[in-house]
Amino acid sequence: MKLTDIKDSAGSTAFAAKGYKVFGYDREAVRARTKAAPEWIHFGAGNIFRAFPAAVLQTLLEKGEVDKGVIVCEGFDYEIIEKAYHPYDDLSLLVVLKADGSIEKQVIGSVVESLTADEGNAFHMARLMEIFSSPSLKMVSFTITEKGYAVTAPDGTYIPLVMADMQDRTLSPKHIMGKITKLLYARYQNGAAPIAMVSMDNCSHNGDKLKAAVTSYAKEWAKNGFAEQGFVDYVNDHTRVSFPWSMIDKITPRPDALVQEMLAKDGFADTELIITGKNTYTAPFVNAEETQYLVIEDDFPNGKLPLEKGGVYFTDRQTVDKVEKMKVCTCLNPLHTALAVYGCLLSYTTIHDEMEDTELKKLVTRMGYEEGMPVVVNPGILKPEDFISAVLTKRLPNVFMPDTPQRIATDTSQKLPIRFGETIKAYLAKGEDVGKLIFIPLVLAGWLRYLLGVDDAGKNFALSPDPMLLEVTGQLSAVRFGKFVQIGALDHILSRSDLFAVDLVACGLSRKITGYFNELNAGVGAVRATLKKYVNK
Image (cartoon, rainbow, N blue to C red):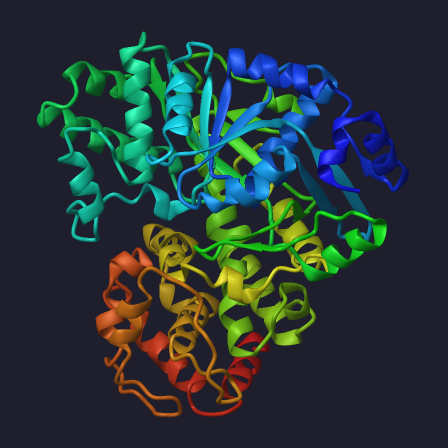
């Protein structure tokens, strides 16, 4: 069975006979309607898009709630489109791995067109301009990772690529945010119809990050005479261009070998693992957990798709903020990062195996309940107690989820401020003594120990990619495995509020973190011994 077999009823029957759910709508009619009057285009063609937003739309198509599909565009790794979309007629297979051991397999057909935001591809760029110029377009959404919105360096200056874009009078930007701004400019020039620009990336106040990048480009282009001031006014008028906040939550690991093997036994042929030149791991199938949440601020000036009928929550900005803080600061993301850091140090390769480790399970459980929950704000639409319970008892221990600490350890420097710094700030805001915290400082010390690249057995291991990796490892260049460091020796890192959201020296946590670091770095077996000492207190 191949995905392209779905084009005829015989192919669909063969899939159904093996327990694969195949869509029942007329996909070619959906494709034609979408091309004529597009309503939704999504940037970021990775696994999370296919496993979640595209699957939600599939549900709506099946229910007859909508009659158009989604167009996907990749703005960074064009090989994803060339190798994982075009050869399979934009179809994909979603494999849902449930905590109870059952598996669902569903062919996703809601994606009806796939493009690249490649300035070198005249056809694709012309099509994107056509889509953005269409007054029917209601939503532009994004899963491009937090790095995709960064247009400035830590000192606030524009990064060189962005600066070059802003000074290019031909408006042929290389940065994805420049490309998005160019497409919005085309919409402005062709009637200035309203639009919602919806970041679905897993970062705090994601809509603001998207708006800041777009408005930066618009202002500079207007200042340089490449665009009108009216365009700047357009992107700053939320009644015409909105940038809603959102919170997304669904684990979609890299394609797993065991899932590949299972599909191959079914006779499913499209199981090839695709590793692009930019080190993206994908395949014609996506394996994902069952649990998912998407909460979006209800701010759609051109009308919205009825995504709530597929399980999406629409609410106000304040509630989105509370849900995001609940998840990112307390109930999931900090636990994930703790498992990532210590999983690498203890040579684990799956998250579910870590949850069978007595000390690691106690670490994340006690950190979540004892240090996170006391300062969490209940968002109302989701109960923190239910959320964290599901994380600890169902989601993280799910043996069918092949997620790895090495993957989750990627970009840790970008995650620390929101995942741990915000909780520390919440304690400070309440006037409480942060010195009583044990597990959050232990994770921060664990990250510094991780940066040495030596596991608990004294063996070297590869650090996961991180945009600040060279900088932070450079700041630890004088530290050696097994060697004691003086109190104050790490203050040049611990005082960095850009890394931790707070100055850990000024707030009184640096001595504790340095002490923990010395215990973790005492020699072979010290990580395990330190965990046992503190999680069992």
